[in-house]
Image (cartoon, rainbow, N blue to C red; front, side):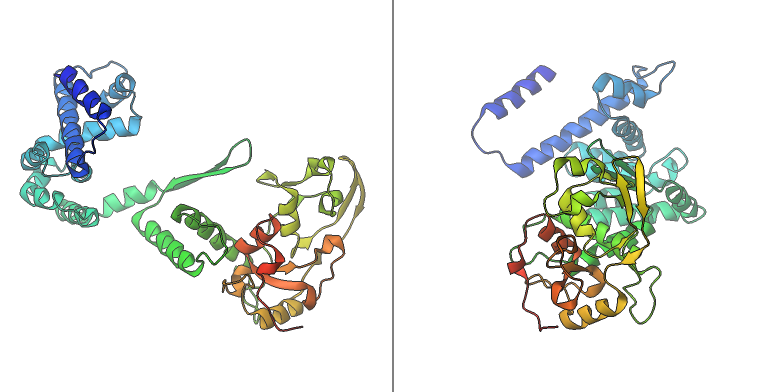
Length: 380
């Protein structure tokens, strides 16, 4: 039987004729149904028994599946026994696999009998196209049959919240985590608001939705660090984000040498490019530490602010928003950019400053947005 299935798949691969995608998708779902059926049969027959591992672990090791997926499939195979109407619709191709798995995830030993009473209703909804509606119906039914109206489930999900942030050897950050429904709503809403306020402008490189979401996350964090100690009347100008690092004087010079970049790194993220340092130092607080080589400290300076509050307010009054052509990001999401960098002798005065949003400030310093992209502003 499986030999015939393999040959049919090989024939489809070899054919140059286009396949009907909806029908192919239904066939894939029917294969998933067959897979779950076989998983349950194997468990009943004792083929998944192991002295030191449960059925999901055996499926993981023998079928080369991630453990989470194997455990989900074992649970789904068991759950379909409590929902015979849904199982029949699934076998007939009348319910997609992702909806069946969504329903099956709500079935556990304590609720199997009760949720079985909603078999017909769940089957009707599982055949619908809108996954959000299916999820909502499953949630309502699960709350209905729970004595505490879902409070325990909500608490369980909340306790599972976590966020992991790690860096690779080349200092690329990897973010992974899980949020409870309320937290997901807050984060999703914040993302959507920030993404809507930061569209691509003329001349920008097109960003995918995932890239725009990444930019939104960093922007929200920047905005929090800048404003969480805000003072009136400036509000969004209490100070720059508290990013700490070490940079050599040579790196900030106009012609940095490769040797000068040996000791230029952020406290958490590690080494960064010379042009990135020059952007960060456009408008920041600097604590001067003059060193000879890596070990000998020659001088400790005092903290100085590159762009003081009154100058910032004058800059905001003049530019009003990001000066990149077509961008209207408000001052709260902007930085003061030195047209002639202060490390190159550029003065810190209104004539030599422009408001740039964080994204376009980075684009300028990392070499993708020349000064010609600025909009004309009234003189100082």
